[in-house]
Image (cartoon, rainbow, N blue to C red; front, side, top):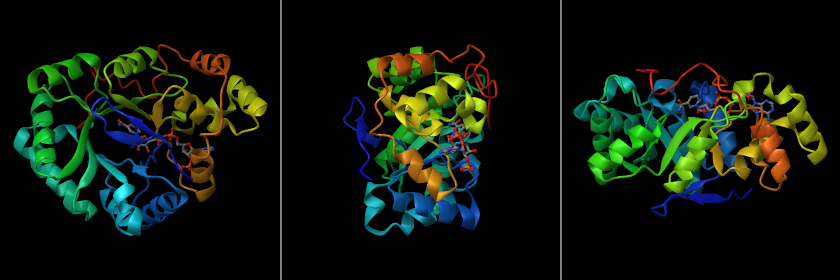
Length: 278
Ligand SMILES: NC(=O)c1ccc[n+]([C@@H]2O[C@H](COP(=O)([O-])OP(=O)(O)OC[C@H]3O[C@@H](n4cnc5c(N)ncnc54)[C@H](OP(=O)(O)O)[C@@H]3O)[C@@H](O)[C@H]2O)c1
């Protein structure tokens, strides 16, 4: 299955869908991620805090020729935002994957109260210059944090990975990123497997299109040019989630799913303005 790519302002392209890997760990994780790569996934999410960079790296190393097409991702945890610690943490991520480099490295959360994310960003810039990572970006950053980073370093992120699903569609944030040439990855794109797939609006649209509710939701992300990162352990669900680029929602269907959004629709009340993760 060939996956389309989306481009950031600097010309960097990323696959239009990726595999979420939270809770895919150990040997079972290697098997699940390996089968996803064989099914066609080329963007693999991960983070220091998921404790599965080893599994992701092992699956990527077994991928043979397609290794060069993979975007293996990791994320810097909040406890290591200080410049020197951040650089060492990135090196450790590379060592844990067993790869020559990590393809995409993100700052996991801005932790604005701690206020060290500019140092962390400088470390990511240096890591890219040293060839430890290919591309650098952010996760859970608000426009005010992004603008400060760009003003202080002159370097813009290629991507920001944020919470996006029909209960929290983030239209304003998506417009901001599009205007600034920053790609958006959507975390928990299926709303972490809660009741969303049984919602009557989703079920009705999926039935009309002859697809599964999960596919209708992922096609909604694709229509909004958000890169969804669905996590699925089984080969059947992985393939189902990848097979969404032929599904065309009408504007009315996109709007009907977006209308499921609620101001309090975040899954765990993690507002990046105040939430801290270490
Ligand atoms: N940057 C951040 O702060 C952040 C935060 C949260 C998550 N993330 C990333 O985003 C990824 C995805 O988010 P998530 O894991 O929270 O949740 P998700 O991808 O929204 O949902 C995963 C759940 O949906 C189920 N599912 C997957 N495909 C399905 C299908 N076709 N039909 C029915 N059910 C299906 C999965 O079941 P099975 O597991 O049984 O397959 C699992 O229970 C994470 O794995 C992680 O990589 C990043």
